Amino acid sequence: MKLSDNKIENIAVIGAGLMGHGIAQEFACAGYRVHLHDITEEKLNNARVQIDKNLTLLAENGVIEKARIPETMQRIQTTTELAASGETADFVVEAVSENLPLKQQIFEKLDSLCQPHTILASNTTALMPSQIGANTKRTDKVLNTHYFNPPYLIPLVELIRSPDTSDETVSVTCDLLTSIGKTPAIIKKEALGFVGPRLQAALIREAFAIVEQGIASAETVDLVVRNSFGRRLSVAGPFEVFELAGWDLVLDAFEELYKDLNSSPEINPLLREMVESGRLGVKSGEGFYEWSEERQQALRDRMSQALIRAIQQDG
Ligand SMILES: NC(=O)c1ccc[n+]([C@@H]2O[C@H](COP(=O)([O-])OP(=O)(O)OC[C@H]3O[C@@H](n4cnc5c(N)ncnc54)[C@H](O)[C@@H]3O)[C@@H](O)[C@H]2O)c1
Image (tube, rainbow, N blue to C red; front, top):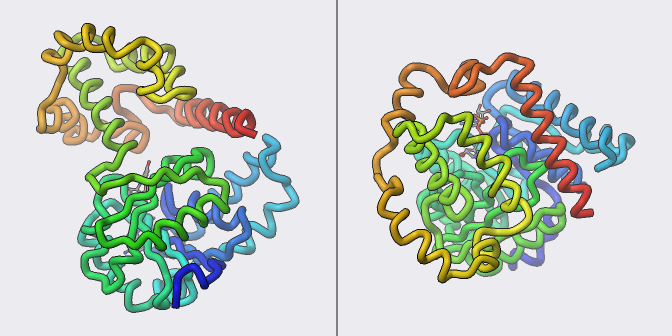
């Protein structure tokens, strides 16, 4: 049976954490039936509460109608049984913790539970679909759909195929993502970190080097990015921005500078030190900043309001 003969109706989302709950919400909002799976009822209950809050925020800002919230919530069934989500799914998005053996194990189980036409997609940040789907017998129907956080406010999804992923799987996935209002970006060749996470990793490596070398504080780095090229990047990509300047100017500017940038394949010692000393950021209450409840909420509000304004501008 051809994949494209199957109308996709049922979605399974595996892992109901930060990403999984938002991905489930996106599909339910667009009218799909969703089975959301996690290992405990507590995690699933938290996910339901959070989805309800997210939908309320969208309704308060006129992105969706308030009347649609109950029907959207009803389309999401939660379960601690992997089989209950896998058996009926036409399309699965896996969003469990970033751990290759765990993801491989889940894909292997899903391969035996799911119907033959079902596509298995991972939301991994950095791993490759050929690694994650290695133990399945349907490597042609395995790929990555990489969402950005928060998935219900960021429109782009990177779509990464392995050498085995079929054109049909890519095309069905692309159509599915478009049907829920996402902008899919097809990545030509699988590579660790694809495009978005690779670029962000390069930025944060240099940001740590700047702080570690005493060139500027973390606060100053954030101030500079937020109020300068960060603003441009939300409306034009790096190639567009630099084509305005001209590559000759870029070449002159970068010739000396590149020699001074951090290009170490090792994790910056400052990053290791922060993790070892428990300064994890918001989740431990302290990182480069002190994270009181009020400060966390203020940042979350600032980000969601700006991202909602961007959605409204996109129309
Ligand atoms: N956080 C981000 O900004 C972000 C962005 C893009 C992609 N991702 C990727 O998305 C995935 C999930 O990340 P997250 O930030 O949502 O993590 P998270 O820790 O918030 O959620 C992971 C969830 O997976 C569940 N889980 C663990 N083992 C499981 C199992 N065996 N079966 C079912 N559920 C299980 C956990 O209980 C948890 O609820 C990771 O691969 C991550 O790299 C994260």
